[in-house]
Length: 133
Ligand SMILES: [Fe+2]
Image (tube, rainbow, N blue to C red; front, side, top):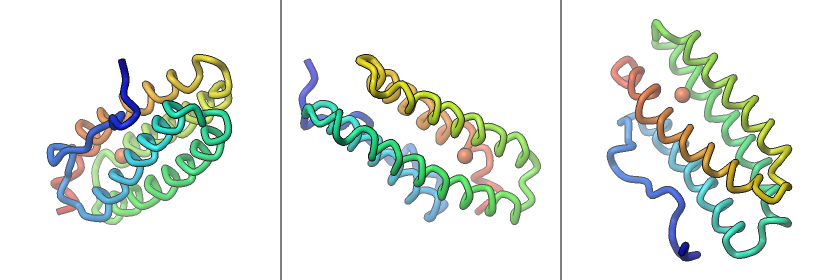
């Protein structure tokens, strides 16, 4: 049984890349996903899910622009592949946000976001970290 005071994603130091602006934005994204989870758990899914997803989409946009600018500036060799991953996530988030109003939509969206972000931060973003330091 889930408790409403439980965080959906617990941020830990292992998720930190050591690049302050990126780490800060990653925490912001995780925090927004946790807020979305909280709203759904407390029965405010209907009124809050739409605006939260819209906010998350904006935040993700800002974050990807920040990351891509830093990668281009640093001459990261795999920058095109990394940008392609970002583009896929934006498309998938938009796709899932459309079905978020369905009964199983919010759970599906949350699961996807948690899986994608934790694996992206800890695998894909970790690859570029040495280039930005
Ligand atoms: Fe990234």
